[in-house]
Image 1: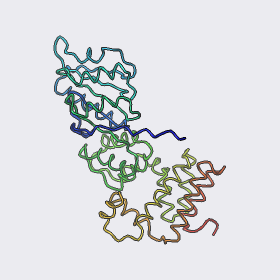
Image 2 (image 1 turned 180 degrees about the vertical axis):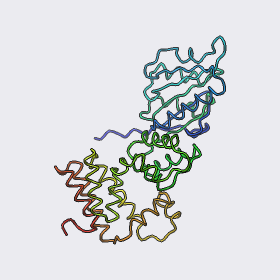
Image 3 (image 1 turned 45 degrees about the vertical axis):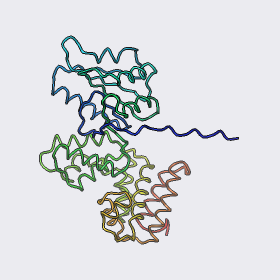
Image 4 (image 1 turned 90 degrees about the vertical axis):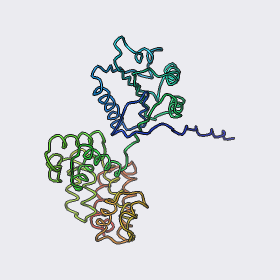
Length: 344
C-alpha cells in the first residue's frame, strides 16, 4: 500500500518590504533569499557600503548559522562601549543549527539598536523556515531582498542590461546580445565582463568593442554555432563548430542552443501579432520575437520540422545514446544549415 503523501509545507505570505538587490538598504534584519550568489553578494556589499558611508566606524562581523556557538548573535550585535554601528552577516541559514534558529527567532522580538543583521538563505532547503516565516510576518522590522536564479536567456539579457543601466552607460543591442551569448553559461563571468567594459571603455559600447574584448569567446560560443547554422551558412557553421570543439566546448550545450532557437522559431512561426503582444503572450522579450522572425527567413514548415526532429535525436545522442557525440552534433549542424534531412 503506497504511503500517504505529506502535505506541502505552507509558506507565510510576506508582509515585509521587498527590495531590489540593485538598490539594497539597511534594516534591523535583512533577509537575502534565493540561489543567485552574484546578486546576493551585490546586495550584501551594497548594504555594507550604505552603512559605511553613514558611519566609517562600522563594525562588520561574519558568522555561520551552521557552525554556531550559542550566544554569538547577541554578543556581536550588542552595542559596544563607543556605540559604533554593527553589521552582522550570517551565512548558511538554509542549514542552520538548532541553537542559531532558536536565538535568531528570539532576536527578532527585540532587535538591537544600531545593528543590522543580514541573513543569507539560498533556498536550498526548508531548514530555517520558521525563522523566515516569522521575519516575513513582520516581526523584527525586516526587509527581504530576493535573488532568484538567473537561468533563461531573457533573464541573463535583463541582468546584463541592468549592469549598464546602473552605471548609466549605453550599450548597443547587438553588443549586449553578443556579450550575453559569450557568457551564457556563467553569470559570474557575465557580471565581471560587464564591469570590465564599464570600467575600461569610454563612451558607448558597440558590438565591435565586445568583439575586441571577447571575440574568441564569442566565436566559440554555442549560440554562435546555432546562429550560423540556422542562417544556412553551412561552411561557416562547421568551421565555428570545429573551432568551438577544439577549444574544449561540450557538445551538449551546442545541441541545447540549436534546439532552443529552433523551438523559439516554431513558437513564432505563422503568427502575425505585433512583436510586443506576441512576446507578452508566450513569455518572451520583444527582441527575441524579432530575432526569431528574422531567423525564419528561408525556412518552411517542413524544413523546420525536420530540424526539430534532428535536434531531438542529437540531444539524446550527446547525452549518452551514441558513442560519438561529436558526430551527432556535426550531423545536426548539417541538417540545420542545409535545411534538409541528413544525406539528402
